[in-house]
Image (cartoon, rainbow, N blue to C red):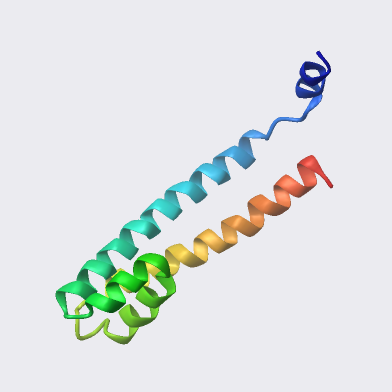
Length: 105
């Protein structure tokens, strides 16, 4: 019974916070698609070991992708992926501060 009372008193996230979290999820999914595309390109170009390592550490794919962006003709993909990463970081900071101010601790 006490749990139900506490659950009813807990503040719920505002619509703005939920919208930003949803946007962050969409941007994150798009970033994963870019990661997969770069890994495929790595494997197609004989970088199988690095491609497999990139499954565990996406930073490898980001660095190797930029190093070979011109040769592999993926400059646009790398630019989009980098922008998505920056947007996701910014959204994370914004949603984190909104949640902190809303729920406080």
